[in-house]
Image 1 (cartoon, rainbow, N blue to C red):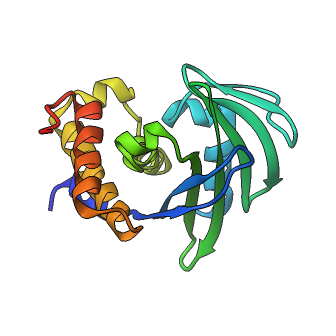
Image 2 (spheres, rainbow, N blue to C red):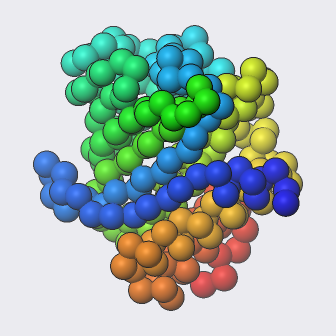
Length: 209
């Protein structure tokens, strides 16, 4: 089993439905368990100095009710903060307002389970790409978090994504999100077509449509 296959297998993915204040929404949920205690994982996910080492540089007022900005990516408002158990925030990007919820749970042997749910609008973008549009990005992020928690340097995402390992990982992630899409009730042919389009977007490969 290759490392990217092991990394993909380490995550549990689920697709569902939940309303947003602005209308119908769809949920993209991913969970992984790390060999690190809950305080370490909490700090890795909330401390700006550590976030930039595995995710993105973040600025803003990082407290309950404060605004944050991820460099070159989303902004939002922190709406719940319960250290070290989790937080919730809006996720504002490309004109859409969605939500993220992060929950941390200690498990046996000083390990921690991280569950992330992204509630996105059920719009044309979802119809075109399905859960993988957000899900592959979160797969990449949680993989990088695992590397960081092992005390290793995380390469720049654009450098890693251009490697054979990165392309394989993103293709596998797209497939798994397609399977989660089917399990969530989407017609299998539609779900697989959306997964191919997602893989093409992330890997610049032909979608096959």
